[in-house]
Length: 278
Ligand code: HPA
Image 1 (spheres, rainbow, N blue to C red):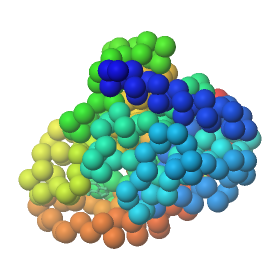
Image 2: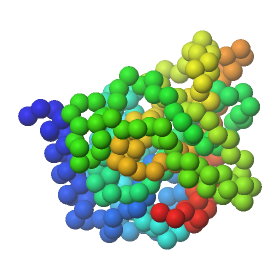
Image 3: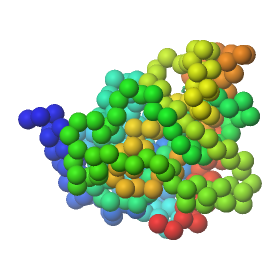
Image 4: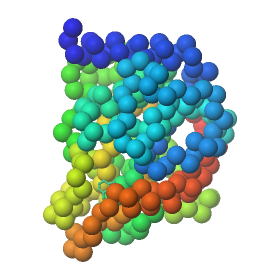
């Protein structure tokens, strides 16, 4: 069987498994990034599925990412939360690492909310800032849509002119202002990793127009847009990289800084969900 047919079949098998057991069809899917699981504690959980119990789900190799799919409610919204994500640097292809999201798109959810930890390239940014993603640059040498297209899932050549919904960004800006949270806005560039950037690479990424750099999110956003979802993306700026005054980037610091910002992010997403019309 061609590789793609096998992928399509696996996605459908995982969906069939979940459809039978899920308490509802989620209207919103959320992926939480490094150190950003705070929100989960506030969600009224109705069902939990360890990734290892779902047919064909990948298993995370990064300790900071728990592998669990949660169905729950918050602020009256029906959510599916992917706790734990997969990265290109772990050795997964973009298709493999977006498998869980692709499965969930078969429920026809309307909105995808994604967070990540990222390095700040814009020198106006400070550690612990939150950045609304307004656009992205994909430098991961892969695309989750590569290979045969399944037309029922989305178009062969999806338009990414507004990958990050203007409506959702405007709403999030209003919410942040009301909540008194400083929210930056910028372009996120995804790199393959796992090694961090050199000073010269950092300079390059700034020149090509990026405000923050990370190793995730873009493959998922491509799948979400392909499936017709509106996307909201937020980066937690866990470190700021100045090519002319470069400091070592320690992963332990990235995790620590993300943890510090997670309360703020959780509060913001909760207030956003309250205001949101799906
Ligand atoms: N570079 C790439 N990925 C990251 C960084 C960084 O500086 N910080 C958090 N994730």
